[in-house]
Image (cartoon, rainbow, N blue to C red; front, side, top):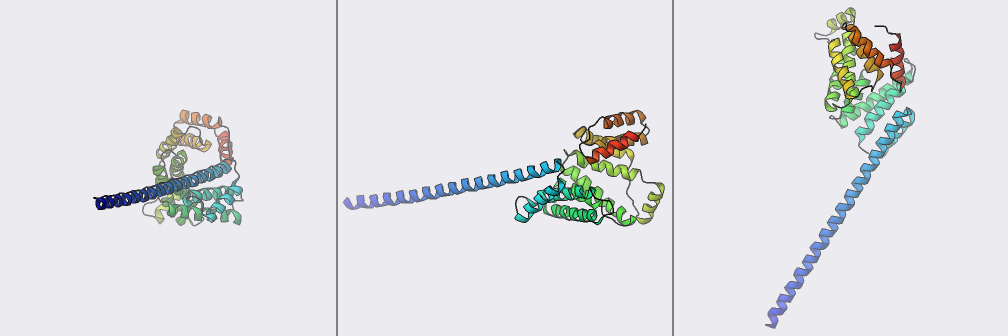
Length: 273
């Protein structure tokens, strides 16, 4: 009948309208998703560019401009804060190294660096770089013998965690080896003092130091002159004179890339095994 045809036509029109509305909603949702993805991609690109710029300044040893760039980025809220914070801690440490050992400016840089590293660790407890730079700067904090021995336990814990979280990073593994070397070479009086202050003072051997340092060298051969210098020293202490001479020769064959390398090469040039 005509009535039934009219009802059917109205129903079809309503269904078509509802379909068009749903299609429009889906299209709007798709457009919003595309816009959001594009915004996120742009933000990620900007963050990657910022990190690359900061790392380039570090390689150029332009530490003051680097810190300015990082503090500006932190103030503006750009990027993941933990990635900026550990880089700021690193910049502060390098700026401190350029100052007189007893100067207040040096101490201020170290305090600022430790604060940045602490904030990085709080923001990202599973970030290896945060643990590494926290431990490095914690180890520079002044204090009594008891304070330094107490902090050495925390330093080792964070170096270990950094190496665990970032197993491909040779510097983290080197730092574990350096810690072991420094503990292994403690004098009898220093060990006696540590035993008097703590029931279980820090302990390590030259063999442990060698294991970590050689591991770091396998990860990236020639990444750091001091790593090869320490390998030579460990071998000498363990009576492995030929291997000590081999590591010393490899150290001396390196081209210095920064002040740390120059210092290691100057020391290596004075050694005879």
